[in-house]
Image (cartoon, each protein chain N blue to C red):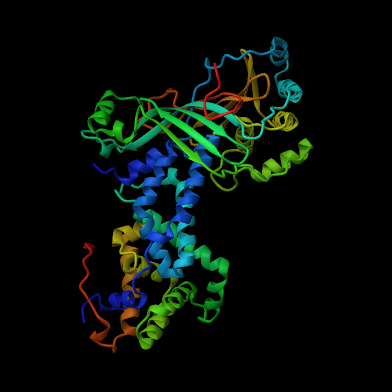
Length: 327
Length: 196
């Protein structure tokens, strides 16, 4: 009897596993739907290293009513209520049957990879910034088309950059390529939810929808993030948009006016002092979202003070076909 | 040059579609392990859940190992535990095992039952698996059926490799005792793994 006799008996008893070839469609379809859902709402899984983020200035130039600026500057806490009133007055977007809701986003996010993948690099991890542009077309029957362009990465270390290209990882990453994907029957992250008509009830619902459990950032961060997800690039009723803003007005948030936009932020202590902010235009659309690592970064492969993540969004536009809107 | 799983997973945090490559590389392994535990139909469901969980938690994949297989099979073990808990079969089996945690393997073996050649072997293996501690059994099954090495089992279950060795030794001894008098007719082969 060999040393592994008992294992062989066990393997024989179990027999050959069934072939997987005919049993992969369900799993692949669900995974593709999850991937598409994340792309469609611009979400990223949040980790301590990737939940970094970015900056704080200069990127937004949107036309707005100057009167709000004065109000925001003198009474920043009530600025969200003023913005809610303005959002309520906006005419709802009418989406004709068969038409598409077109949005764009420009992102720059931190990427990382094991240094061992790169010739001559000994670091455990190396970081780089990866800019991407995404155009999306969504139809009310769940159809989604995404066109994604991956731009040249930005490196912090010229040696890493040289090794990256020498290893051909730019081709693997499809840098410079524009890819198109279509998905049928994408329900959307909030499909099926009946939204309350009362701000208090809306807050209660939002409390239920935000991620729970250990390791989550403070409640205000999660609520602000949920609000941003609801309001960016989406066609929702003006009343709901206004109510979401009223909910934000009831929270302990930092509110600042900048140019013609309103920046709502939370600064909190995570693994480092972190500031998460969402920028609204004068109609209540989310036009930017960012997180800045203020100090205490425990990432030797990223220089301190680097802007590592920022996203810009355009408000939704109705288009008749799968083309960008006419200029 | 084929990229390591770690690189693909790291990239997929920013480019989610790249996670499809991980699916293509490892789906068969995950499905087969799930299928021998719970049958093909449930195995498909389990495998689908494994890849959804893996995708959702991919930012936590920190392994420097070139393969994501141990990580995915560790998730599979968790999903299987939840599967048995939800179906209640684990509780029923546990109740019959005089306080020992044996439910998972009874279910596993019941599903494998139709493929077992010898009723005697089946009965004895079933009893042996039921007699094991569940933690020993999980190590045994990952090693014997998923073909992981000691180190990979340790990664999958997040336990020290020494613990893997001791648990596997206990499980194998139990298994060996149960079939000690069945002779060579049940087969046998040398192991090929490099476990040191």
